[in-house]
Image 1 (cartoon, rainbow, N blue to C red):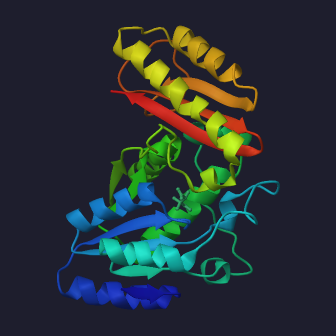
Image 2 (image 1 turned 180 degrees about the vertical axis):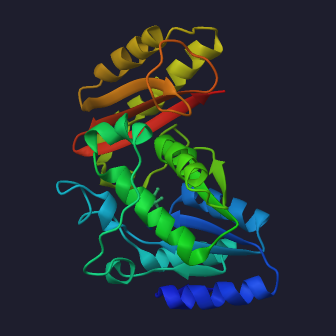
Length: 280
Ligand code: PAF
């Protein structure tokens, strides 16, 4: 497996693959890879001749009071995982390689990025759209892989690709959970033992809401209320949002029609975790 640190190295390698007529899949990540990332990479290996995984902790998508500095990193372990899955190249640039000192061009999105996580993280999706666009331009993949856990991010990237005529297939992959239900996340590592237990309230609320909808409940307020009550019973949990939104526009809806996304962000102590289910 090749490790590339510069844009030039990636471009040279991809050019060779293209000359050989090979397809290329891209899995963008911020590192500290877990089984969720592994599932994206496995899918990419299945569907493409060559796979690039990027490991780049993108400063542009973190607000000034967020966890950029403390975000977990283990590049050596990340490379081992990528190699074991059959990734062909890891792209691991320094921030200076991605952002020139006078960098001033951004990709921004209206509407979809203003609700849910966009409300409490106002610059987040501009950072995501910008770095993903850059990665698409550098790697020029046929397909790119994103997890359904970041449902709003996935919807935003699909919209960006459509709106800006990017010739890339976006493949969404299901949420991967721990055995007890907690959605896999690099940020789970912040939780102490007591918080780890308390964090189960997210998946419990998701499973409750999902069951209500499966059983025929279509009123968004009723489902939301039941989920919020369950979360509020956990003393270590503080709700950022629990929302029911249209699965494409990310705007609030009153009734479940397909596709509808039920998404939440909840603080467990200082750690902000997200989870969701989609009705489609
Ligand atoms: O989902 C993530 O890990 C990041 O937002 C992404 C897509 C790699 C962009 O930095």
